[in-house]
Image (cartoon, rainbow, N blue to C red; front, side):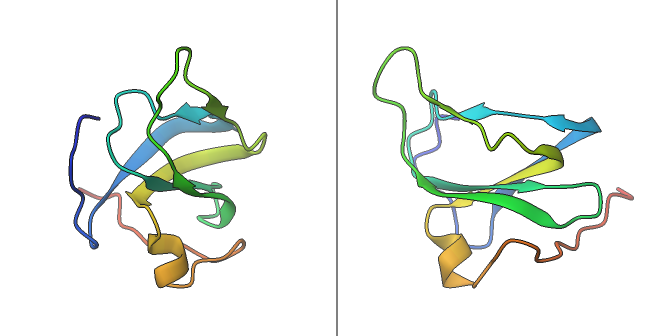
Length: 96
């Protein structure tokens, strides 16, 4: 929230306790984002490309209506730039 810039190699990973429905919105977000919902097998199950900052109240909700364990936000356009697709595996280490 409130970021005016996001580097191409940066993002934000939301890690939830359990796989469930997690709608997102773009309130207080100043830049376009690609939002990826990822299941407990670390497979991309939904991609919302180039979500635009919210300009109305209430903010529209982006709801893939699919159960996810993780949600990844990337700079808008990144998913196309690097060729992400539904079913792709996402690799990350949670042993921090």
